[in-house]
Length: 267
Image 1 (cartoon, helix red, strand yellow):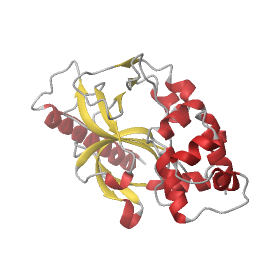
Image 2 (tube, rainbow, N blue to C red):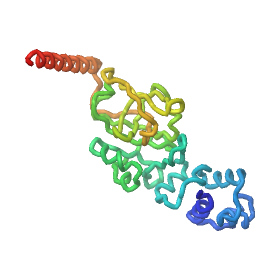
Image 3 (cartoon, rainbow, N blue to C red):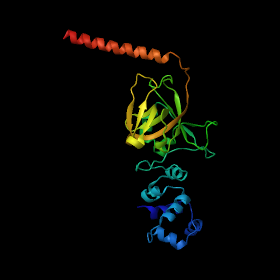
Image 4 (cartoon, helix red, strand yellow):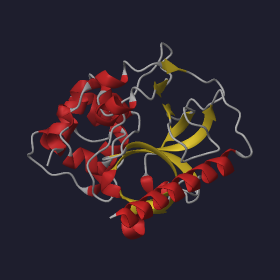
């Protein structure tokens, strides 16, 4: 348990004395000192008070060694990016801010996607990504833009830039809506989601292109979830684009079947 070391660490990190914190929490300084030095154990009321004061969940104060966090991670934690899901480890989003302390929108291009799959939680990696802002998006929410590839989400074209809003609690993912998901094995995917996390511990992912079959993704394989907000593309979607793609792939499948049959006949 890390409660004692955490409240002492957070107090010093914020430049507060024991008198400052004790006064803010309406308790005696000796009581606070007892908590910090493991002389006494806090009751539930005290735990709630510390949680509200530091703006950090009780589970985090008790179970996570906050002294191991980087400055960037601590900053995000104290600003509310603190969530536990079905007993999983703490997830803290690495992000960047501009000179006005507003959240940037980081851009993950096609070339950067491979690096993002391993560096998504590293503040040093995130800070080298290109950044921009969109004045029509809320300053109170976190956004990131990803470049997609392939035709699984036609009529949204290959190479489009998809902006998503960060989802803290995966149980709030809504059925039938598109999401950008960072996965353990596939990297970044952009799919329509059916949320079965609470009942079955998984998501079912579907494409807009019916040629791609739905598949399940275990919650343990999810690293990040971003709710689709909008996309940017230099291409105008064509009304018959999906039909043409379907015909092409159907023809290719038939050609493959014919080749397989001819190969068997020649044996």
